[in-house]
Image (cartoon, rainbow over all chains, first blue to last red; front, side, top):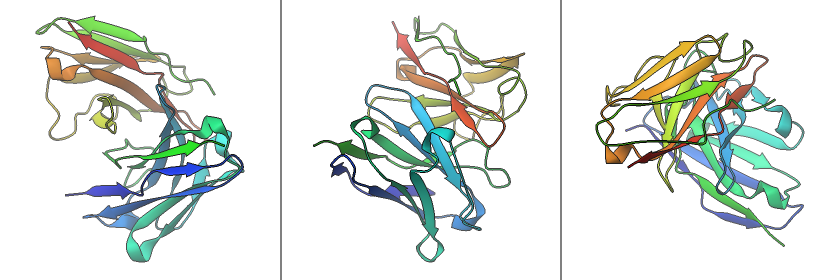
Length: 121
Length: 110
């Protein structure tokens, strides 16, 4: 079945960067937008942005512009999210979520299992 | 941009119906059909329950339904079951390439 499998938990120091991967299977990777959503402990969901796996084009939420990068490797059907200049309040679970076929704003129908990123000195 | 407004908590007894509201503005919920709802059990990833305001994905129980009136979307769960106890989030496209989530609602089945 369609699956998104994310990389394992990370512990980083403040100021460092983290790169999370999201490997897809059982569908055509380049046909669907990929979004990233984060959730701080005990908090709600926060949309970070999307990547068009076909073109590599991206759009980011205003809060993340300038310090998030989203890339993809079509040869291995994998999307990546890199967050730089980490702060303690970036401690959160990070999810990849499959978006629409024809529009990036269709619902997120498949989610990865999440990657916990802990920022601590 | 502000999150969409949801009640922090709702509760109901097994077999009852409950409704969770999601209030936005004419720039988001009131303008686009890209309104969706997600269920999240503790320690799990969110699961899509409703998309395009009223549509149910294959495999989601028909006890779940979505609607919209003006700038407020709603999720109704009928015939409450213990397994429905979870957090629920609404989500909407807000124009200018922006997506908003609601703050989340904790559903307790008494």
